[in-house]
Image (cartoon, rainbow, N blue to C red; front, top):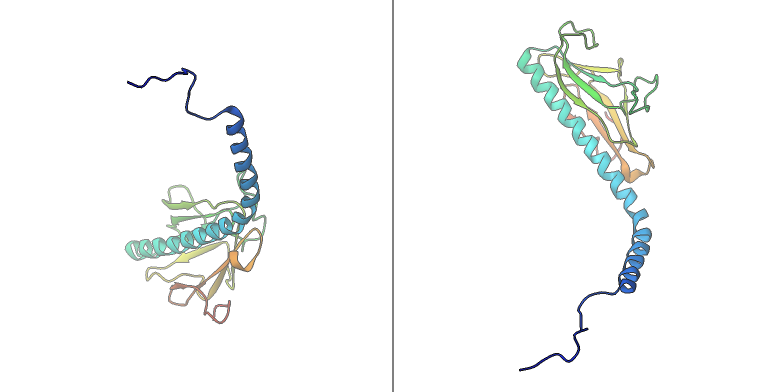
Length: 185
């Protein structure tokens, strides 16, 4: 039978080895973290683009189901978001989809909220080429009042990689712009 001659033999790490490992990990993290910023920004813009497309699809289906009277209203500045100010074409604080019974473009008491979207920070959305950029109405055929409009989505760095666009066609179809341009025609 084999006996250990020294009862002090212990497996594990010393405090110095652990501190050196943590220091190396900290240095590697500090070096790698800035390279993740553009990637995270692209993910945020992609997420918001998908949320916006989903909102249009929900609004169109609800309008067809209810016979019209659906409005997508941009959210103004709140305590959590101060990105839009008085520019009604900026939708960076999110939006609300509701059943607009009197078709005035304002959510009055008693009008059902169907969806409310808040956006992540540092993503800007601008709606252009529309007469009333503060809201979008959806008629009973699912057509959007913002037909032939362009929606520009940008990350905080305004880099081309973190920019996206959507077009709203005359029949209410939501699609990215043509591959050879960034404009909606």
